[in-house]
Length: 317
Ligand code: ARG
Image 1 (cartoon, rainbow, N blue to C red):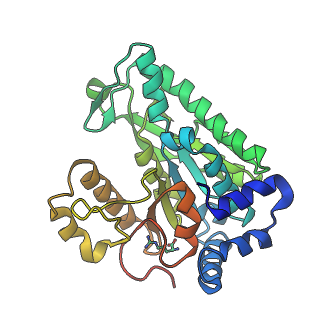
Image 2: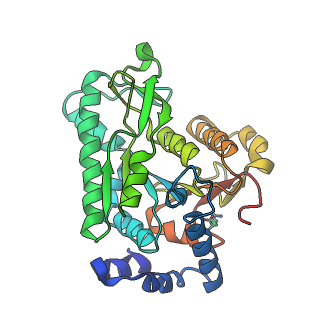
C-alpha cells in the first residue's frame, strides 16, 4: 500500500538520500516546474528577509498530528518529516495523544468525559495524560532519529496558560503566551522540534490543552506559510456530495459555507477557528488538511491532494 515516494525513502534509510535525490523523487508528483516553484517558496520562507522576530527556519510550517497517526502510521510519518528536513525545511511538529489516553484511562476504569468538545481533566486524567504524551513524543523522536533525522522532544515549556474554567473543565488550560525559545534552539541545533500541547500556569501547575488549539496559538506567534493538520481522512469532505473539498477561499466562501445545513458541530467549529486564525496571519499563510502519505503532493504541486483553506486567491507573490 506504500506509495512510491515513501518506499523509495524507506529503502535508503539514513545518509543515503541527499537533497538532489529527494528533489528528483518529487518530480514524480507533479511537473518539474511546479515542484521547483514550491520548493523555492518554502525554502525562501525559511531564509532571511522574513520579519526578524522569528527565526526564519521556524516560518515554514506548523504541523499538527492527531494521536491516531502516531499509532497507525508512525513509520510513514517519520519518513515524511525526514524527507522535508532533508530538503532543508524544519516543520514544527505538535502532536496529540487522545486515542492512546482514552485506551489507558478505560483500562484503568476512568470514563473519558467531554464538555463542548473539551476533555474534562481531573488529577488522575492529567497524570495519565502526561505519561502518555511523553511516551508518544519519544516514540516519534526515536523514529526520526532512527532515520538519521535529528529531533528534539519539547513536551513542555512552550505554552503558558490559565485555567479555562476550573469548575467546569478541571485542569484544562487557555493559552496566554507562547515561548518560542525552545523551538528556535532546537532548530539552531539542527533538530526538528517535537511538541506536545501541555501547558503550565503561573504556579507551575501543568494544564491540558486541546492540540488543535495549541497548534493555532503556535501559528499566531510563528506566522508560518503553512499550518498543516494531518488526519487519517486526508481532508475535509462535503456533507452532501461526500466529495473531498479541494479548496476553500474564505473571503468568497465563508458566509455561504457556514450557512450550509451539513456544516455543523465539530466541522463548523473547526472552520470558524481556522478562519479566525488566518485572519490574524499574513495573507500568504494557508491551512492544509491532508493525510500522511499525501503530504508531499499537497505541498509541492498546484492541485494538492487534500483540502487547502486560505483567505483569498492570491497565495504567493
Ligand atoms: N502546494 C500548494 C500549497 O501547499 C498548493 C496546494 C493546493 N492544495 C489543494 N488542496 N488545493 O500551498
